[in-house]
Figure 1: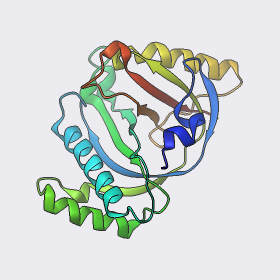
Figure 2: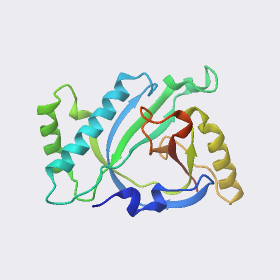
Figure 3: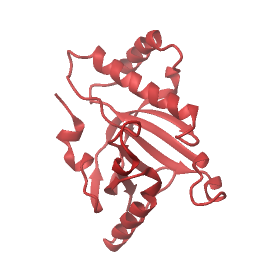
Figure 4: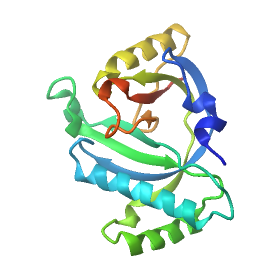
Amino acid sequence: MLDFKKEQKELYLPKTTPSIIDVPAMTFLAVDGAGDPNTSEEYAHAIELLYGLSYAIKMGNKEILQYVVGPLEGFWSVTDEFFDAGPINKDAFTWTAVIRQPDFVDGDVVENAKAALAKKKPHLDGTKARLEEISEELCVHAMHLGSYDDEPATIATMEQFAVESGYDMDVSDVRRHHEIYLSDPRKVAPEKLKTIIRLPIV
């Protein structure tokens, strides 16, 4: 059974110390939104939609491939208001929540999954989800252990490592801060959360 986390450990099992990685192009289901992920109904809807579609695809294509649904991931940026209300103003986040898909997933597969999901969960707006290929290319990444609110310290270490290794940071609205969530915050204590952080470099 295909499991991205086991098949591609270089992508999903970095050390807590930063390293450089060239990330290949991958296919994702994606939903855009904005606001504090802890309180935003839009974010909660996006996550339910992504998982609903991902499992509909998996269950509807068992004869093609047996696989483990990938972890939730997110690409993040901020509006100018992020800097107006202290160090962390989560209402100023803009995000694209994603779940990686196997190579066989195409537009027709996604549309079939949307139709199946609409019958089970008609409150979900399938039009908000799209299939997208994302190519991150060169990045610095590391495993962050602990609360999401403690990420700035890990990010600072990553940025220092990248610069000392001869690279420049290249985070923008095009090449975004990327996180991969290996823990479920509903089930895991904040200090035990595992989150992969990737930052684009040149």
